[in-house]
Length: 373
Ligand SMILES: Nc1ncnc2c1ncn2[C@@H]1O[C@H](COP(=O)(O)OP(=O)(O)OP(=O)(O)O)[C@@H](O)[C@H]1O
Image (tube, rainbow, N blue to C red; front, side, top):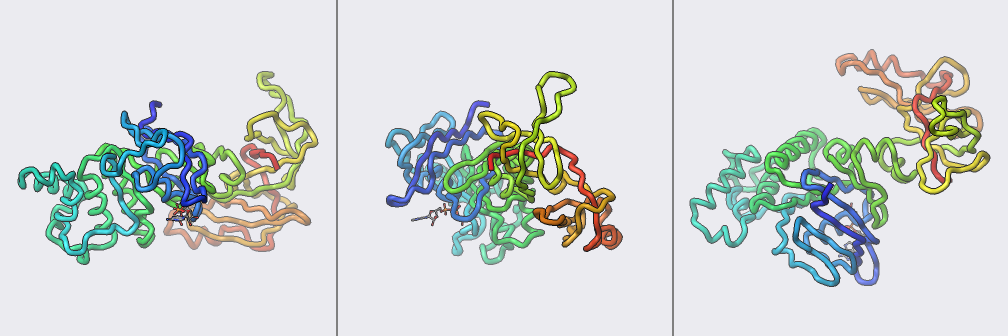
């Protein structure tokens, strides 16, 4: 992949306090990238730096063929062809929808003939399915409509890249989910690469083609949603992006690969007994007897007949449920119970959830992932 937005070893701080500590990230022009991380990790600072609103202390940043930042050179924000969608739409209250969108046009285009300007605004209104709303004032719009106007304004100048800073944060869950799909479709129609900042893991996984996990000013991992979820680079990534059981374990000599190609498999002894383990850290593999952390997703555990574990809590979510189990002196374990029934049969499914106090054994259905403790 030739990177379209290429960020290398970017460091940014406020005063003497470093906030971004060596960010390296490549985005292709076909990507919808989500930067996801906890509050305060530096997501907005990264977007602001890409937009040119903050200056980097060091590092390089290139968009297409244009250098944005390098060796103390800082391209001014208005010279970067980048659109911005803020969290709260931030429409001008005294301008109608069409005028708000027209404001996004480059000064050069604002000066051209009125007809050309109106044509572009009409195109953008159609793109965001708001053709009939051009004369409405911002206070006459729903939250979702206001965000679509903000997106149209950001796209007015045909930017190379659109930055979206938590654009769905203030919306109710149903509207949020509808708007996510609409925004994704609009950006695909406009053929514009996008970088979305969110602290919502589900949003990042469901919306983006590329996910970058940010933690304390660095990118801990970047890759496809499937990669970062199923092969987390660190225990932090595993715990941040979904439910994770992290168990103390000791490595044991694994069985030989039946094909004789890969040598012995890694195995580890934990509260789950001896299980296969895929070692996720670089460097040397642990030798038998070493302490490791073992990560298992709840959906990699299934409940089978037995007495080893007791259910202490259940949490039903319609499509499935989360079951918490304990065994004597062992760490509590979360297992996902698959009650794959249509929504209309929710009550039936609820009755299928394991009962609190019932006993089961737990079977691992995929190798556990091993990390340094
Ligand atoms: N203008 C500023 N001056 C000084 N410190 C700042 C400034 N803006 C942000 N910070 C600090 O920089 C750190 C990163 O802030 P930033 O807003 O980038 O995080 P974030 O990941 O976007 O957080 P959130 O998800 O809560 O919006 C925080 O510790 C914040 O307090």
